[in-house]
Length: 155
Image (cartoon, rainbow, N blue to C red; front, side):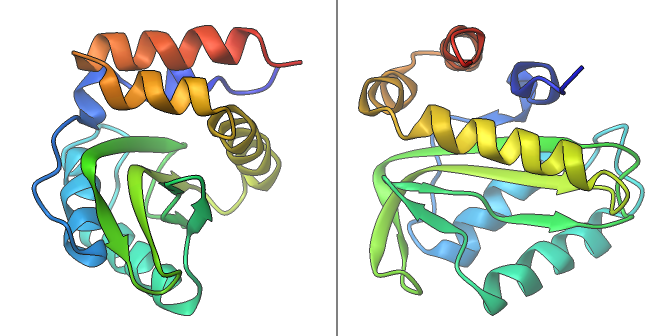
């Protein structure tokens, strides 16, 4: 059975009010949610790999969404954190603002699971209505509920 986004992302891993408007600082703010995650083996190693991946190629997908990520053995299993900026974070490497940032860490051996989760998340976030609901969500729990509801409708 495929991994569910709503099971990987936990409410306490969602930052609803990102302070930073610059890409690297905002990514740091989101990644920080994972600092004491029980599945994290080496937080600094993971963070360094996320930034290295971001330098190679922008993780901005359009639709005001970015997925900074790392396939790394610094995590025991897939982890995810999310950040929201109502004003937007400037991703200069793709010349656009991003309102939703999802940081994903996956062990190297979990390629299939990683591709399934990222693909599902990308399909979900193409929907303007879902993005609007996530941007307006009043709490971490509601943010996650909106994501879970949309995920259940995916075919």
